[in-house]
Image (tube, rainbow, N blue to C red; front, side):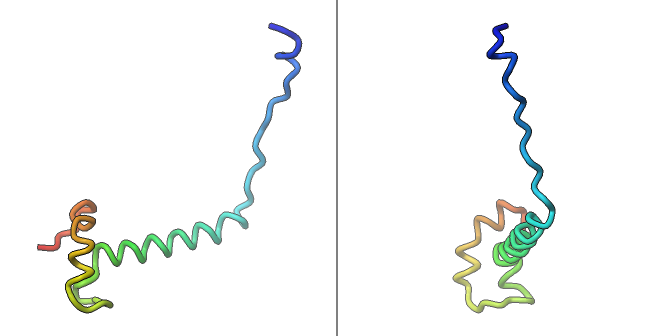
Amino acid sequence: MSQAAAARPIVVPAPIPLREIAPWALFAGVLLLALMYVVGMDQGATSVFSGEMLHEFMHDGRHLLGFPCH
């Protein structure tokens, strides 16, 4: 082994504080819950949008995620 290879410092990534991750994790969680509602539960008893267009647009996503819709 050469001296140049042995002299390389080990690079350790700096940890990211929880204070910086928490807002983004909360935002992603709310966004995913909203998407889950739109794909899986809309057009039911708690429907926010009227009509069948949203149901038909999300139809394959429902089946992919295991939601019954027929």
